[in-house]
Length: 113
Length: 111
Image 1 (tube, chains in turn brown, blue):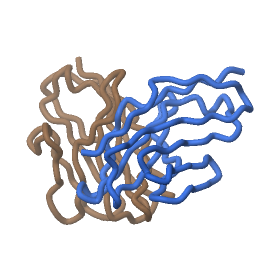
Image 2 (image 1 turned 90 degrees about the vertical axis):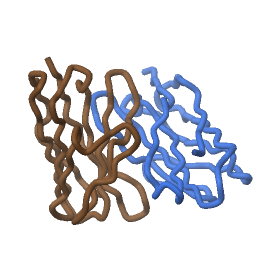
Image 3 (image 1 turned 120 degrees about the vertical axis):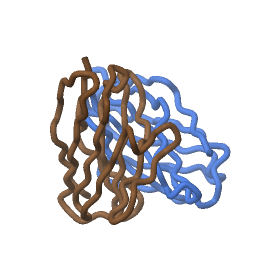
C-alpha cells in the first residue's frame, strides 16, 4: 500500500484568489489522480496527473481552472484558480497501487468566502 | 459506461456479518470489481477487488456471481469502526481503470 499526505488539510480563501494543494506519496507510483467531493456528494475525478507530461482532464474540468503539476513519481500539486464559493469542496489526491487499486489522501477541505 | 447499483443504506449489529450487494449487469470481461469505503471526514479507503474468483483479505471477502453480474462484499464481524459509505465500482480497461464513484451504501452499525 501507499501512504498519501496532503497539505494544507483545510483552508478558507477569498473569492478570486488561488490555492495550491500539495500531495506527497511515500513511494514511487506511476499514476496519481485528483478528485473533488462537493458537500454531501460523492467523489468526482478531476484529472490524472501524468509525470513528465500534461495532466489529462475529465469532462467539465479545464487546465486553466485546475492546473496540475507532477514533477516526479512521488509528488503532485493541484491549483484551484480564481476561486468562487462554488469551488468550496474537499479535494483529494490518490495514487494507483500495483493492481489498479488506489490509495487516497485525507483530503483538503476548502471554503471560499 | 458500466454502472453499479447498490442499496442506499444498510444497518447491522456489532459483531454480526454484513453482506453488501452490488449489481453490475453490464459488466464486460475485462472489468474489475472494486470496493472502497469512506469513513466520516476521511478519504476513501481501498477494501478489496476481484475479477472472476472470490477474494479474501484481512478486511473483507468479495463473492462474485458466476455470471459476474453481481457481487457481495462481506464484512465478517462488523465493528463500530465499519460504519461508513461503501462504494462498489467497476474499473474498465477502456477507461484506463479509473474510478467512478456512485452514491454508495451507507452502513450503520448498532452497538
